[in-house]
Amino acid sequence: DYIKTIHHGIDIRQFDFHPNPDDYLLFFGRFHNDKGARQAIEIARSCNKKLILAGIVQDQAYYDQYVAPHIDNDKVVYIGSVGPVERNRLLGNACALLHPIQFNEPFGLSVIESMACGTPVVAFDRGSMPVLIENGKSGFLVNNVNEAIERVAHIKEIDRSTCRRHVEQHFTVDHMVDEYIKVYEMILQDRSL
Image (cartoon, rainbow, N blue to C red; front, side, top):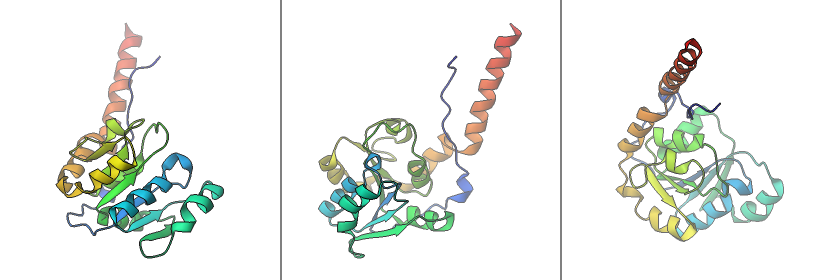
């Protein structure tokens, strides 16, 4: 029986808060139609901002057709998969994470990790995004590329410390463990009746 949804938690100590970002946008995820790298490139180009792409190529045909032709190592840079230290630096120094997902994503670890570094997220309003992002406070929820372009222009209105606090309050490992314990207590209480 369903009892409660418990969200993933991260070890917030692994993510440094960066109050003063650089001026680039970041796409951080697997290269597959679901994740929207193609749309991220379109958004960054329209905003005239540098885009750094990081992640594994899961769908080579998608990458070859929609991503590779735009990589110029100036405005669009692909750096591949990164480890924890580089992830922390990339997420923290981005002015925003672009998350233009093309499916109803059940969760988004990169969204939480980005906000833990203080970096707001511009995400398509699908799946779990309204649960993860406080629209207008820790990022922006949008419906399409054009709305994303408009919101990127307002990204400096988001207080980066609010992004960090949002994760501290809702998406840490400690919070996740507390929620699991509450569920276990509910199960034990139900069995004792």
